[in-house]
Amino acid sequence: DVKVTQSSRYLVKRTGEKVFLECVQDMDHENMFWYRQDPGLGLRLIYFSYDVKMKEKGDIPEGYSVSREKKERFSLILESASTNQTSMYLCASRDTGWVVFKYFGPGTRLTVT
Amino acid sequence: GIQVEQSPPDLILQEGANSTLRCNFSDSVNNLQWFHQNPWGQLINLFYIPSGTKQNGRLSATTVATERYSLLYISSSQTTDSGVYFCAVSGTASKLTFGTGTRLQVTL
Image (tube, rainbow over all chains, first blue to last red):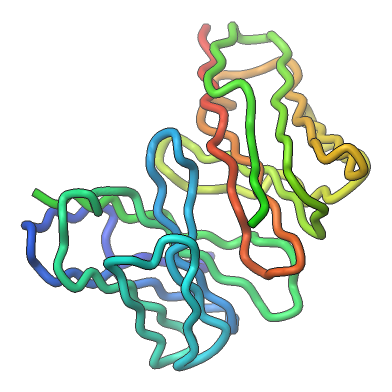
């Protein structure tokens, strides 16, 4: 019954590395979202995508980019990881026309040293 | 954008106690959801409640849209209720804006 998966639960990277976080959904949803979660700040939207090859900036896109080459996969890219990108990253997907967010991935806890 | 404030930030309860969590938001919304994040990080949707009242077992929620707040009630709390509770809203934009959460710990 897996709906939204993320490539890693825990990831440790060094400062300056290029990091890829992958999110895959099996529900044929058009919309996909990347959030980061930090203590005391809740979840903040980094980027989202309405469809293949389409992307929109969220509230905190600086230092990140995304790729959506296939409908089921939405990748978050840290071009040059920094320690302030140490965080929990969550992916979500939703079908166009839905209002309710129901499907979130399990999260990737990224540590940049 | 819409601002979302949650209170209290932290809450410790003994098993069996009741609690009320509050969410204030700064503008009219077409979506308001309450989520529970379990200790393993998984977010679970509890309620979709842009207005009115809903109940699901020991949990219930009320949103007063005209006054821009929502309440989540937890009755007879259990240790499995521990975790972080988030309120999240969206207005005309499709993106969901989260509050900073209430961390709940239920002790024996």
